[in-house]
Length: 280
Image (cartoon, rainbow, N blue to C red; front, side):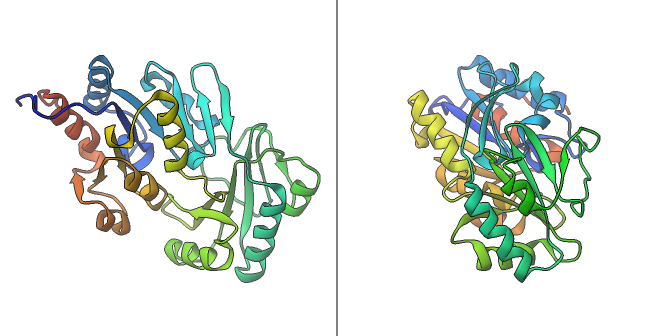
């Protein structure tokens, strides 16, 4: 593949992880790892921008850029992954969280709640765990009690599960009921909502990071696959949806790449950097 010398390199690559950069099994393929390394060597900063909480980032720490920083929880937290240190959070006020819990509990019976906060994770008993960390100690109580007792102080992400509803229908109804108070999105294949403070998205926190680095949005290339990526993909100067993306994302983003299973992010980086593709 020849170099695209006439096109200046982006200064920053912002990529989602699950369903975008990572293989279906959750790892980083050799081809993608090589492309990330080549981007860093070319002076292109790579920032992981994910819905994952900070406590799930150790699994990808080997591939974090030289700066060591990731934007987590849909923009709710900025973490130095290598040092295990929260650099900044964008908290959801307890009063707003309590209002949203009440609205969703009333309008969408069966909803169960959990919280990501600087001290860890807490949940209601009805909120069933499917992912990593289920064996880690955490508080279990009603959402109202957890908020009233300040057990989730500084929370930056409220999670809501429903056992029966279609994921997109769940998102649409929740936004209708409580969207004026908070940001509500989703990234999971099941009915799980991710809620942040009003105005806090992947895009808003990435914009803050870029501003601090003196990077203009026109110098950013972003990658994503799910509704929680939409604001970031719209904000970046150039954006790509992977082929396996949610239909809404595929419709909203003009540029597409192959699926995460086929190293879609790496394919674009190779083209931008003028690299020969490495077999997966």
